[in-house]
Each structure stands twice: as C-alpha cells, then as structure tokens.
Length: 151
Image 1: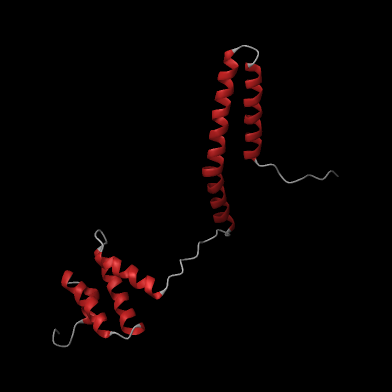
Image 2 (image 1 turned 45 degrees about the vertical axis):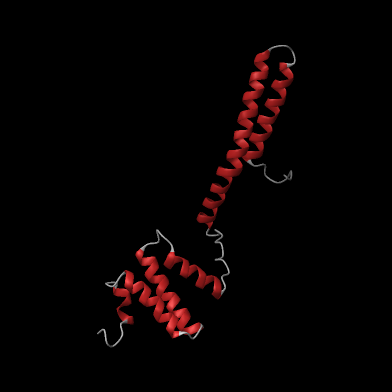
C-alpha cells in the first residue's frame, strides 16, 4: 500500500496553479503577442488576491469554524491587570465622555470597594459614591450607600 505525505491544502494548490499560469503566460508573451502579457498580469492579480483571501479571510474563518465544531476554540486570556491598572481603568470610566450611565455606576461601585477593602480608605470610597450620586441621584444601585440621615 502506498504511503502518502502530508495533505496538500487547497490554498497551496491554488497558489501553485496561479503562479505557474502567471509565469507561463509571461513567457508566452515573449513570443510577441501582447495579449499573453495581459493574461499574465490578470493571473498575477488573481494570484495576489488568492493569497490575500486565503491568508486573511478563509484561513482564519475556517480555523474559527473548526474550533467551534470541535469544541477546541482557543479563548484569549484576559490581560494581567495590577490593582493600580484596575483603579486607573475604573477612574477613566468615571471621567470619560460617552461612557454609559450603567458602566459609570458599576465602575464607581467597584472602585469604592477597592478603596474600602484593599486600600483601607473609606473616605475615598465614599467620595467616589458621592461623585456618582451627584450625577444620578435616582440610581437604584446607589441606595445601599445611603447614610442613616438620608433614609
């Protein structure tokens, strides 16, 4: 029984065919007929498009679909953020324009907990909540933080 080497991908077959057609028609163009040069240019353009599409579109799409079907899709790990990075990110959410109300309130809640629990600074924690409460006094998420005098 004959043994076969590794399977040739359809992309490699297409590249080989288009490359050979480009070179062959360019050589035929040397016979004096300019139409062969035009055909060579057309094959070269299709060859470039084939390379681009197979490497940038069909290859990644096929890998993604195969991962979905087999259950072996790779999931990127979340970035390693330090506590200072997290604080900076949450503070940016509070000050940035275009961030939704929900994201800003959730960021304030998380930031308040970090200040209170990790940095042992309840004054800073309360200031964050007060800053967000000043923007949205009716936010139901902030009712938990109402002081006894406000109830």
